[in-house]
Amino acid sequence: MSSAPEDTFISHLVELRNRLMRALGAVLIVFLCLFPWAKDLYALLAQPLIASLPQGGQMIATDVVGVFLVPMKVAMMVAFLIALPYVLYQIWAFVAPGLYTHEKRLAMPLLVSSVLLFFCGMAFAYFLVFPTVFHFMASVAPEGVAWMTDIEKYLSFVMTTFIAFGITFEMPVVVIVLVATGLVEIAKLKEVRPYVIVGAFIIAAIFTPPDVVSQFMLALPMCLLYELGILMAGFMSRPSSNTEAPMSDAELEAALDEAEAQHRKLEEK
Image 1 (tube, rainbow, N blue to C red):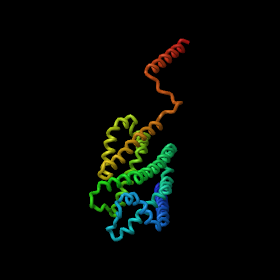
Image 2: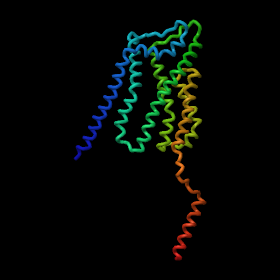
Image 3: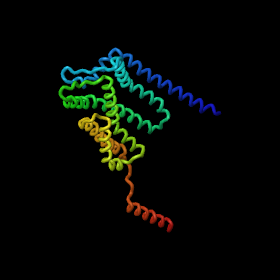
Image 4: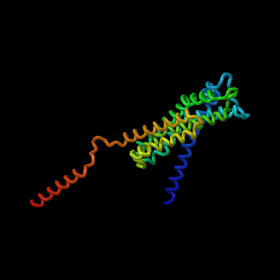
């Protein structure tokens, strides 16, 4: 009798292993396809910095194997992003059988929107933040200083910025989940708006270079996306038009008096 739960647990572990192997296999296959173009992918990633360097400026590699490992890391990152829809499908296929119908209806749109918003955050950082920050850094470099950076440090900076902006763009999803689960009410979110603004600038000061431009470019979208999350949460939680509004105290008292009067008529009959 006790073997049934154990068999179920083992079957879940086997399914989880198979799902993970499929996800890792998809990433590996895409990585092998991108391997011949690893140097080109890094050149594309470094383009915002290269375009802002002074005339004759270039990047350097202080590690012996850095010229090989860094492009491989970039190729692996791109491979994971390309295979991400399939990876998320494997996660969804494993989790979905244990969810209720209403949870599935909510989880799938949130999952898709989370991925799209994360990609939007990365694109915002690459096309807007990087050129602005690098141009500002090049303009404030002292005369006679060769402004160059190591490719490993540049990759670390890019990854940190991508993650920071990707998570920042998840703000609407976080707000909607908090409201949908009943943890926070919309009125409370509006009440703490000043604290969110201060927190946004604190986070921007931690995860961006020490210049005002990049801090504003992270804090401002965070504040705007917070407002968008409140707007979307209010739209989703708005009662439908066929839902009756609750009666006021006067209407409730009048209804009780009418019911009592009808009851007396029935007793008299």
